[in-house]
Amino acid sequence: MNNWLSVLIFLPIAAALILLLLPKRASNVFRPVTIVISLLQTLIVTYLYTQYLKNPQGYHFVERADWINLNLGTFGRLNIDYFLAVDGLSIGLLLLSAFVMFIAAIASNEIKKDPKAYYTLFLLLSAAIMGVFCALDFFLFYVFYELMLLPMYFLIGMWGGPNREYASIKFFLYTLFGSIFMLLVMIGLYFSVIDPVTGEHTFNMLYMMDAANYTKDSYFSIFSTDALLFNYPVRFLGFIVLFIAFAIKIPTIPLHTWLPDAHVEAPTPVSIILAGVLLKIGGYGIIRICYGIFPEAAIYFSYWIGLIGVVSILYGAFIALASTDLKRMIAYSSISHMGFVILGIASLTSEGVNGAIFQMISHGVLSTMLFYLVGVIYLRVQDREIAAFRGLAQPMPRYTLFVVIAFFASLGLPGLSGFIGEAFTLIGAFKSASVNALLPRGFAILASVGILIGAAYFLWTLQRMFFGAPRFKGAQEWHLKLKDLTATEYLVLIPLALITILLGIFPSILFDASNNTINAWVHETWIHGIANLKSMQSLLKF
Image (cartoon, rainbow, N blue to C red; front, side, top):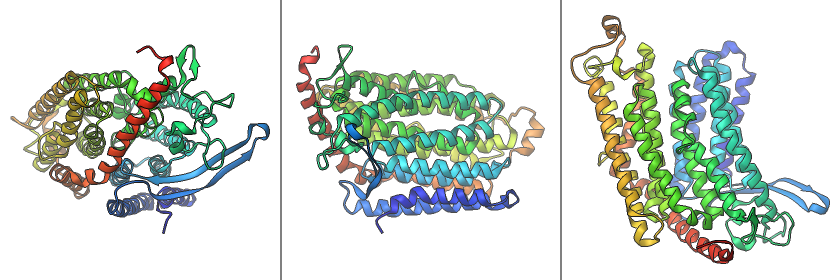
């Protein structure tokens, strides 16, 4: 069977259509159907991952067919392909996405209002996420990228907290802002790139990554290496626009303000998806599209990209340290941890980029665990204020054990997954000064300070909330509500904790899949980037 990727995408769409046909009185089947579909996706991706490890290089499970083919007269033809494939960059993130969606489906037991609409939107979101990591046609990628926006908007706006409308609109506008300009760049690239086989314009991202496929003959060819706009290289402008679009998703400073609001207002399963999957799409887009298509701009702006990563690490850590709401603290810690992804990518070293991918997957698992743990306590007492709790370890010892694992993994304790990702990004950032001279070693030193601050806010929160004499707001009433973990909560937390430990002890599980692809990607990005910069030398001031 060669269409596994299509199955991943269309299986949840088919399930969503079935849910729409079912009457509302069948509400008891909506969640089980969603859980089964998510489990099937996880099993399929696990199988694909094991198959990929047998030959971990190049693109696997390729599916390609004509999708839209229109004759535009004097403007030639409009060619859009249904082009799917995965490589060492995307296969791990695809596995993470399927697993996180499965966990989020189980965690959706708290959803009581209009379950039919909720689970239908959930399944559509799942299909879009699978498509984003599989698509290699830019137009198809954009369709899936935009398709994620609508379900997430409604999932926050309809099932969120008191300020859910504000948070969902803010999320929508921020993401749409980046998407609109991404669309303009995508159209410009289409008219600039020629399919070397057919001679027609193409949205094929693999062809966009090769400067030999760019034409200078067409009036619309604006992304050739000698093109200028307002006396500035157009390829640099294209890179900046795409980088901003994906930086909003990560999010980086100063494009981050939608994230804490969205997390605080979103229900627990939606927060899990936001942190566990959607943030990773930003990092994936920067590697696959920004660096892949505009390598010369990536090299040229590497110092500033690395600086953005360092600022995100430090700013997110300091705000997390000052946060009084547990969920907001974890949201800002996500900004800090994703800053390591930016720093690793900016280093353009194998260690740094491998570390960035590992960090995305590790953070996906850890943030899923952290936001679920917040949801557990909030479901019992409807409060997330850190100061409202003390001595939680006594009434909830098993819950405390999982919090300790998640906190220590997040602060980078050796033997747990968080340590590996941060260590490799720091190694890459430090090595960059001697290998390619893109980043100063001071960036790695400043980033390591962010780890120290992370240890401070995690340990301080652990001390304040879980240890010492028990003291709770409305002490007697709350103490009766603070029951330890249920069977469903164990079902979610045990696999997350085991994966965290497993990745910390055996990181090669992920590195074996990504290493060959990343080594080739770093080499090609550097070679093509330097070659393009030389051809653009007359346009630049060195």
